[in-house]
Image (tube, rainbow, N blue to C red; front, side, top):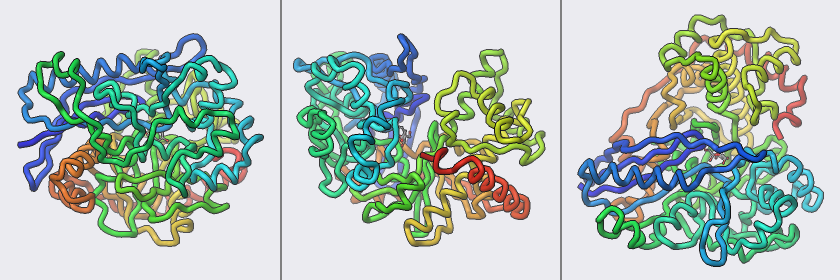
Amino acid sequence: MNKVWAFDLGASNGRLMVSGFDGNRLFLEEVHRFPNHPVHVTGHYYWDILRTFQEMKAGIGKSIKKGHKSIESLSIDTWGVDFGLLSETGELLGNPYSYRDPHTKESLMELLSVIQKEVLYTRTGVEPAAINTICQLYAIKNNNSSLLERAKTLLLTPNLLSYFFSGVRANEYTISTTTSLFNIQERNWDSDLMERLNLRRDMMADIVMPGTILGPTLYTIQNEFSIGPVKVIAGAGHDTACALAALPIQTENSAFMSCGTWILMGVQVKKPVITEQALEWGFTNEGTADGEYRLLKNIMGMWLIQQCKSAWSKEGRIFTYEEEAQLIRDTASFTSLIDPDDSAFFNPNHMPEQIRNYCIRTGQEAPETPGEFLRCILVSLSLKYRWVLEKLEQLAGKSIETIHMGGGGIQNELFCQFTANATNRTVIAGPVEASAIGNSLTQWIALGKMKDLKEGREIVKNSFPVKVYEPQNQLEWQEAYGHFIKLLTNYNVEETLS
Ligand code: LFR
């Protein structure tokens, strides 16, 4: 059976999955998994990208050791917006900044004093936000300008890593659409925007469509592993685009959720939705693996739980998934709620403390025990999805009956059930490894083994199990939603959402 390597890198861990395809069914095997966190040093948060590359190579070594033969190609997908800069000689200039670096704190305001928010949104379709590539570049320009002066080429994270494997410099469509430098009408880098910010357009490596075969792996890679050439494919480079590609969506009236460090909720649309309302509610238009658009909202996601767990583990309190679920079950429902997207939760030193402060500030009972924190987070996230879903229906002009959820977060069954309860919609959860599977689909299509994504999704449906959750306990969830909306209204929803 032919196989491909799908590297799926998230902002908390990365993995190498081997995907096999026998013409009817897809197979997926995890070969290597490693933590991937930004490193905090000299007041900044950086990606340790060379270690990441090293881990990817360790994955290749393991795969070969396991006897995986006939590997045809590889592709890499990652989180959005971050990038690396190359020098004239093609060397990496420093460690890429993480989008959680505080250096962009002022840059959104500064940028918006040069380019109006509405103009930026109309041109790029992307919600103006400090994490976006455009703000990061502006921050570097203002705080570390010599770095930009030395930069010859900007490559987004998946494309930087593809370059390490192939030597080819190209940015891929789906990841490029996350930058807020991509003109969504012209479907290319926005030269005018860049000029107005004094950013160099010539730095931006050209954009290629998902499925472009960049070339073979470098000889150095082949020699290191004593293997022949493997095609390096720029499949969909953005993890969210990959997740959407793999979800077995069957009807127009479905929304998708990609559940990881961030949770992205949206619908696929033929044309970007760029309206005053979409901007006000903080919706973004990004590219899909088949060249269309996904109208979505970024929601803080599992980050809230990851950060609580990291704080608790420093105190020696470590819980398994089963223990967490039990803790939540043993806790009273709906005691306190948060707006998961409040800026206080973006990168605090101590997440549980921050959640407690939020509850006290908003006149609620503050959680004390891990179970109370976890329940507060999961319930609040689910209620936020209901809010997002209602707005999505209005913006896309259609009703949504089913929600397809994919990604690591769906391993938490209570979380899926809460989502069904809060939204009063049927939830279809699976596959867990949606991003890696979507990554592999874009490779199988590029290799001519599958016709298109429609066929790919059908194959996913027949290859991986899904779990269906029907809404329960509507009375109490309706009431909780009323409290949640009051919370958003009283604590200025525009301010907290933007
Ligand atoms: C999810 C994701 C989101 C993006 C965020 C930051 O992993 O790719 O789509 O907005 O990470 O890059």
